[in-house]
Length: 319
Image (cartoon, rainbow, N blue to C red):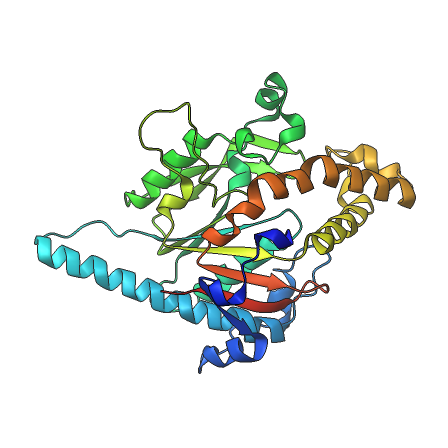
């Protein structure tokens, strides 16, 4: 992310932990994942190891388990005070970050680890991709080249989803997005049935931009979060990861005739690199600068990555 967004350490609202310092906070938490299970959670071109899970994700899962337990205890105390029994409220974790930074992998690993804790075995994962406007709507509004920007989402539908989740409804439905078709699948829905924890992953989930033209208070997706995470890395590194992923997809998913990006499968390596860099400059990098990176300091916890895509340090917001 841009260096201008980082604060001097002495004035930071965060506590910074190295890998060695953070790994000690795992305490006696066992490692429940095997190498074969981890292989199914890795993103394209990511080298996530069991050591990284052990040193970074296990302490984080322990921290989140403590937060969930404290929140559940607060709900029980409130119910006792009011003399009532309310519906169980899912604990909501938001995960934000740039395209290609690895937030989807972070979300999948946390889902797998958190589901191993006995107090909250039901962990649902929803991505905000499903709440993008269909391509038909984006084309009508001239927003196809702004896909992933805040204005490309059906924010009203996303907020309705979060309201229903936090209302404790027994069954809430979310739209499904296909990266192959590069569009919403109108005939499919993801059914979320009152989970103990909901992980919501997306580019702009920490967005809290005000609209001067609107009168009165505004509601943001992040208002429904109990805990939020931002996956971070230097922009030059993220750009390179995006190019590497594009080249990998050119040789795999793009070769599928059903892929929206099938036309890129025939590009030479030089042409593919030029195309990926252009897309980064015009869309993903622009979105990072304008909308995503400015939300970094709204997160409760920041995971900082190094050049090899592995975690380097953790920043935890001070209480």
